[in-house]
Length: 574
Ligand code: D5M
Ligand code: FE
Ligand code: ZN
Image (cartoon, rainbow, N blue to C red; front, side, top):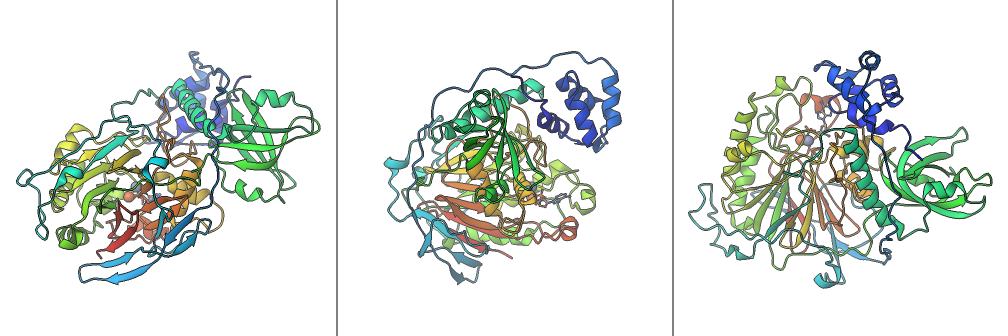
């Protein structure tokens, strides 16, 4: 059974730089060769057009489109994933506030919190996901490493950048940073329709594996022939979500064999989960086939999720990492004084253990990122912005290990996965011998897997989620949703631009120990199934746009992660 007209794929293709009128999308999706039609429409539309209109599409549809349509093939494999047992967990958390002369500090220490309780909404409070039963390395470390351990020692005099004065010389031999899941140099996508098919297939294959061991699933075409009243389950990508006239939810799921409708009754508990659903995420639905066989009445919904049994790895010694993002150098609103205070603090004895600096994107303000952005630029040339950023980076101690991923303001392709900064930009930012990797990447620091992702999809999660449970005041709650869906940008065709690749680099294959994002300029610290969640604030004061939409940024906050406990201390420099 062929796939439905790939409306969402078409939407995504058009979203490479354009919004699209609804009718334009419909026209494209029903074209004889949607892939070619999309390519031509995007090519033909004027560069300065913001929206792909019906007229743009008609223009290209009137011409003959060469047929290069891709086909979709085989059924999902039969390999079942290991069942993910549930277990009770105890997490510890507390909040104490310490004021110091140099900076305000909020420290997480010990207390008890039930695993199911909501992480604190207040950005001044942090929770500790470390299991109180002890974190045994051997029983939880199952991950295969693809890259060899790199250990980098930095000796005195090796680096021209600033050095620490308030501290003794240190033995750097215990340091290690490994990088996994980096798109840099691996990009194969040409933007063709077939590449999107490959991306979706890979997403489906990998995420469905995580679900298939948990339900007795049937391929969609087998469900078609099951007798009414049978119990059945299906694992698929959410194709469509709509409410019926009577207020129930029709959730259409798609696997490699076809599409099947499931119905979630409004009065069931699981109806709450429908609010969390996004199109294109992979879920399992368990239920009962209707009498006429055409629909699955849902009894249960499952997400790939992080197993509750997940136990994070921790470092073998007391060492810390500063998790920051959104520096926005080049903006008139860049908080230069606060950054300087942060850099100065890193030189003090108090920051002795802070050996790593992770920056989750938006080093600079960029050029032409948002409408009217130029009116708020302090530095108009993008390379000058990176030069100035590099100067500010030199103010942090030269013996720190620095890892950077790009964000949506940076000078790399906008579509995710974003490759690391190119050679020219690396040269500019070379002072600390920093590591540059793609967005997203898993950065393993002394055994702690830190998933770094800039965070554009957080806007989308917040926008799509009804109610105030998930908002800009608690970005870590949005991060929970990404972990639950095991994908950093589940929905195609929205705000998050996604590039097609042979593999879906945005799938969260292995449960991380720490999830580090930025982008929304709000501080958020939480814990989810023992994964530490950190959304850094920013180093940019409120912009005119942010004022107009009431975004009140958390400026000059530096969450400091203890790599041996995964506790977080938030330092404020403004
Ligand atoms: O975005 C910082 C935050 O502000 C993020 O939540 C998006 C939002 N933002 C900022 N400017 C705009 C405009 N012009 N349109 C829509 N959303 C916006 P960052 O990308 O890090 O500056
Ligand atoms: Fe930003
Ligand atoms: Zn951003």
